[in-house]
Length: 355
Image 1 (tube, rainbow, N blue to C red):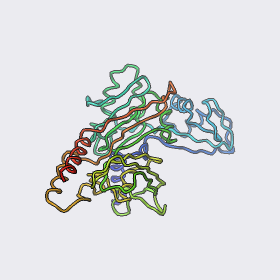
Image 2 (spheres, helix red, strand yellow; image 1 turned 45 degrees about the vertical axis):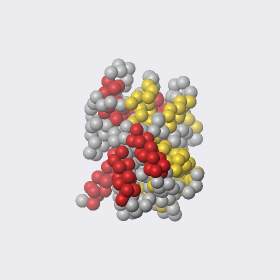
Image 3 (cartoon, rainbow, N blue to C red; image 1 turned 120 degrees about the vertical axis):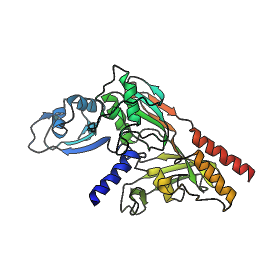
């Protein structure tokens, strides 16, 4: 019974509420293979099919084309013949889940689209892809409906080309691939951390320094299995680094910009809580209570009113930059502050002006 509970909690955390990465956890796998000493020379695409029998020659071909198949430290083409002792490293998309993606006519904000990819500015409250408790009504369901109108779109593409994910209640920018090659090409940039992304966050308290860096391993919380936790001694979890910069101070709340050097599940949320500045109204991390301020009825009512205006954790994927798969040009997008965060900041400014 305990194992079933653990699986449920893991599925809920990973499928419903992913923060930037293991944001591509479950989307891609990094495979390292040492070729057996008795292996006869064999084309790399055929060799990899031995390990990924539910994949296809085309998928592996596009993976090679995108530079995601490395042998002895160098990218190889699909006709490379493996030799005994070769060290093979591959970044591959996981095969599609067994459940069928149901196209649903759900409004989405499309910022940009071409034959290779699509940029979506996701609203808060929308789950990115189907998972436990959310088998429909997700961004992937909406994209499946959108792509169904395009005769050139490959409907067999894994998870409607999902490259990365953000939390259900995080708003902001996502890139989705429309071809196997684009999926592999973009996946490598996310894996190598060469994308350019900034997040906006409202956090409890007056952040002391204008800029700073939080470093600490992130792993499962020792008591609350629905939270991630920052371990300073590196005894658990994965190495994580978050840089931040203060944009505006509201006395008891601060607007900051976050840049991720790594990307772990709930990285921003766990790191900020660790330094005493939990995300504003982040219910999972106890940020939905009054954590800073004065013990006055008027102030308490004010904060409750802001909670109602901003009924989710205050985190927004503000920018997204990457190299285009086909043109090889740098693409860069910005998402304005969403209405709920905008209104919350305006209320804080008015409160400070009057108190």
